[in-house]
Image (cartoon, rainbow, N blue to C red; front, side, top):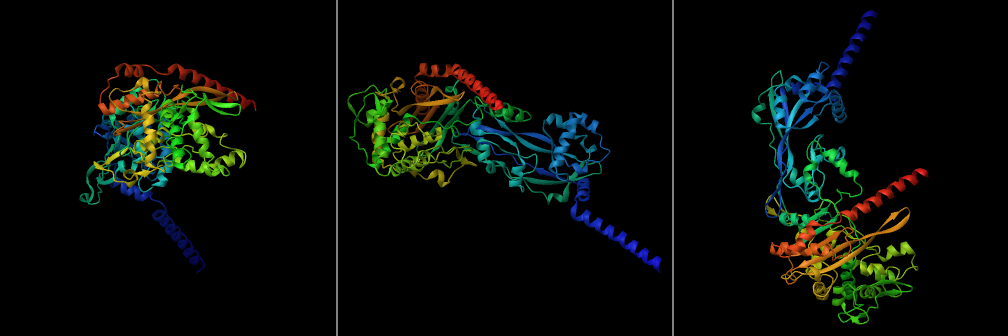
Length: 633
């Protein structure tokens, strides 16, 4: 009886072990389910066609071409797998096989992931007929981006493989090996462009070859292609503007002030988006990332922050008029600059010793005039300077400065428009005054803005008090966008009646002012030059670099169709590079032709290569010096 009792215990123990093992296999592992399923049924994920990208005139800029990818489910690879034979078939080395397999295992032993990407149609034909021999491996077909243009990387962007962060964020859609927009409209309109995945199920024989569809295709899910998008960009104008940036760094933004549509968005140095497609994508990306001198991946139209210099004087005057500290008859006498104590802001307007009003001050860019206006603005409340600065700051911010524009661009910076609280924190509540921050009056000091913000300000002036949020997509799936963020006007805090003075002064820039040397003979333009100072630290000393050349413009004055901002880094006076470029772009857009051929040829064939080479040398020496002293410490 005792022996029988022991037998029952042993039998029960063995049975319990089997039950636990079966429970584990069925509940906690998919290995055998996967084996059974994948032996007879092939699940094919159908990657949808990504939407194409057109310009505003329906010129095709981006479409798709088919490629094949080898996928692997690591758990299904058996111990008798012929690695050498497989590597010879695929055309890879043995260490690459192990490296890629480890990556796949790290993602999941049970789920499919990409083993070899970017296989051409021709190469895949030789692989496909023998792939059945290698258990655990399969294939999928997907689309690869094909950019029909060789520039405008900052607009179009590119797609790259999803990261773990992307997968975690949208695990119901993305899996390892999928692609996602990494920059430009490919990023900002990812969900519009990507479409919806589909599924197909196939029956396979014991060798793994497909013999028919599964369950009469009843379980299949149809892939839905991504939507096409049409940009607001005028590709002919974009291409022309890029040509004008020959051997120049900086940004060009052109906007239609009537609706906020971005007509051109040029960031230079200019990159070819095709360099980021295919097997060499990561290599090219790393190469460009290492170029910290030129920063070629940096979008200078939306991310670069510059002192706006003299174009900002227009807002100084508008704030003064709105705050009631000056009026249309206000004049100041300039004695070659604005004096404060032993210092002064020099003025090169050429009109000294006589009273000048705002229109002339805008035309000749008189520093003294706008410094006097700004001083009155800040001192509007003599016992509460903070209040004066805050009121000025609120007016300036109503033009889109100091804030993200909340547009559909993939990148952006809000810039800096200081407040009274900012200066209280910086200097102490009673330790600053209007003179301390007088540089703000001429667009220097703590103020910095992006080129797209500057172009948006021009739109607000052209419209005499309102603007539409700048945006880059005009149609989705061939239907016009209806988002109120882009179709509803935003009004500034300056009354309409004050803008005529500014517009008149901007038109005089081309008549008696700093823009008369590149005036168009048949288009009435309103503009403003700017020369922004900039500095660099070299061996713990502040060294001045060549000034940035800046120009803003809208045209025609009587019926504005285009608003432009141009910033040429280290280009010197605004009238040297930025002004001529802006006027040529306006002429090209309005007339679709250029009459000033000699000016066009000059801009397209000359640049600042020597200047940049000198600055690059200085930056490299400074970088070496920093590293040297850091190591010493």
